Amino acid sequence: MASILFAQTYFYRFDEKQWRTAQPYPPYGTMYAAAYLRELGHQVSIFDTGLRESPDEIESAIKEFKPTYFVLYDDGFNYLSKMCLTRMREAAYTMARLAHESGCKVIISSSDSTDHFTEYLAQKIDYVILGEAEITLAELVNQLESGVDELTKIDGIAAKNSSKEVFRTNSRPVLQNLDSLPDPAWDLIDLEPYRAIWMQNHGYFALNLATTRGCPYKCNWCAKPIYGNRYNSRSPERVIDEIQILTERFGVHRFWMADDIFGLKPGWVQRFRDLVKEKKLNFQYKIQSRVDLLLKEDTIDALAESGLRQVWVGAESGSQKILDAMDKGTKVEEIEKATRLLKSKGIEVCFFLQFGYLGETRSDIDATINMVEELMPDDIGISVSYPLPGTKFFEKVSAMLGEKQNWSVSDDLAVMYPATFSPGFYKRLHRLVHKRFRLKQGLREWQNLFSSKRVNFRKAVKSFYYGPAALIDTIRLKFLEGDSGGNR
Picture 1 (spheres, rainbow, N blue to C red):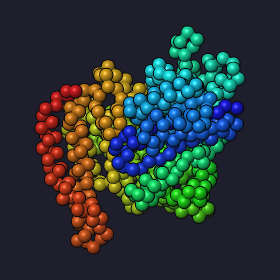
Picture 2 (cartoon, one colour):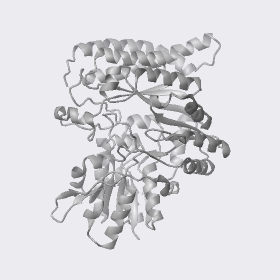
Picture 3 (cartoon, one colour):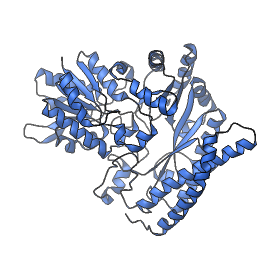
Picture 4 (cartoon, helix red, strand yellow):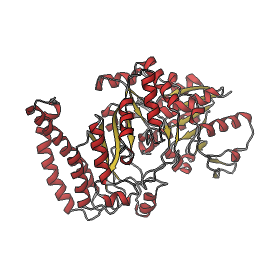
């Protein structure tokens, strides 16, 4: 059987904002693939790049493990990998070159390589897996090991033929029975460096896992090169078994459920809740969801009773016009209703916000700011519209894109097409909205002080900074607004 060394292309140290945030997670998707290939009898190892300092470190792992195949297999459950950052692309090219020079066959599976397989095959990469990759990787390795050259019969790959011409095969249907896969290979990852970072910065340790694959909704800016618009779920029993193992083996009691949409399947969260109670498990978790899925009290109760602590929702905008333009399929009123219901159940609500979408005006921006300051979620994450291949949004703006078509790091926030305002305006807007939000959080803490409620003094004291800082950014934003006119 084959010897396979896995790695992923995301380096937390190369993404300054994420490194400062200090919430690193091991490569869950990579561990899935390694577990599956190991179950088939192959010898596997993982070189975890997450906390490494340089892609050059792969050389020592190759020398030690002596693999026949080097597989760059990104964690398709982590939104950071889905962002297709050029800094990580460069790291992938470096590791591929070093593996090639060591005599390995080089295979890659990632969102970025799926979008740009021709460019990747121009590097020292032999095969690009397109879409969901475990089954495809197994078939590819088995055929290469057999010495039979029938690559065109393997669905879901791109490669070069004997004439050095790039070809791609038919798309592979997504896997429907997720329980047929083994649990991720947690034993191949050293979790102690992750634990140390979490404990030092947050006082607790959290791990990631996924219960589903895909998302059936069709927001027109959302790229889905791996799992597409299908939605398939693991059974609650399998998920609970994995959580029990992780809590007992590693002492972890906080989890990030990395699903695009958690608990969409009817009855799933209720069964999940029942199993938590039946096995007397004690843990907390955070999820991502949609506001229109969080309007039923029975669902919210089941989530709360199973340990849900925090939910991030794609609020995106306080303007219905922009939500409709995005094909979001939600209403501003639903954002308000879901937020108030979740808060009433003691669940933290956090908003993903997006500025710069085509046709957005200053009044649309103000509607979003007003929504945030009225509803006061527990946290916010702000981005600007990012056109990635395979989306309707990309099709709309592709003719207007310049040379730069990907962000370099997750905090890049470059507006790469002629939006209503200048790129400088949106960067300043990002800072201003954060500061106004933190200011209001601080002022609420002062109110709590005078009403004998529990006070977060750190947030309260920081209001002395955010007040003047927000005022300065308001003045600067006004200047940038007048100097914009849609210029890039």
